[in-house]
Image (cartoon, rainbow, N blue to C red):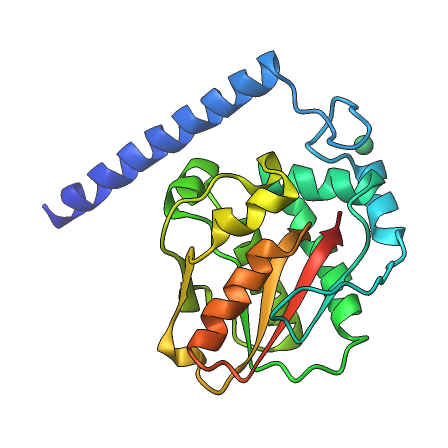
Length: 228
Ligand SMILES: [Zn+2]
């Protein structure tokens, strides 16, 4: 009896997995994945472009963002780095997480920031559900493992929906995210490293920093893959 009840769900799970596999296979057949950089029909980011990304040198520029103690980026949002960030963010090219994190680790090693905790810039819950993941959280978790620091996505929440920053003019971005975040009381006295994929005007990171400081974070730094 026990065996029967145990085997029934596992059989359904197998049928489900098989159905999902067939579904993915059919979608790939009709709409084959294309490399986000060179367009070749292959994976979301082909091996040749991946090799190019790995050998792309860091390009550190000084960036100033209000309310942050300091911030670094691994390069500019152009060429293969832009393609990689977009593929990672919008097209499920999750295999890029390792290579992008390697850049973050290298960039961070050039700073002498005391980091107690990594906090990813949160997506609104609806958007995370739609996309299936928060790209900043994936990078934050991976970076945390690499530098042996904790990553606490729950310490910063988006408390209201906002329009996508990319669709707004620079002057509208600050209003769009004003008061959109709330930090946990756990950040008190901590030196926080905020992580996001891209910085443009810095409005989002700046608002996140204000929310963390409102809870008495000791310092707030920022790290991003690329700057526009
Ligand atoms: Zn390619």
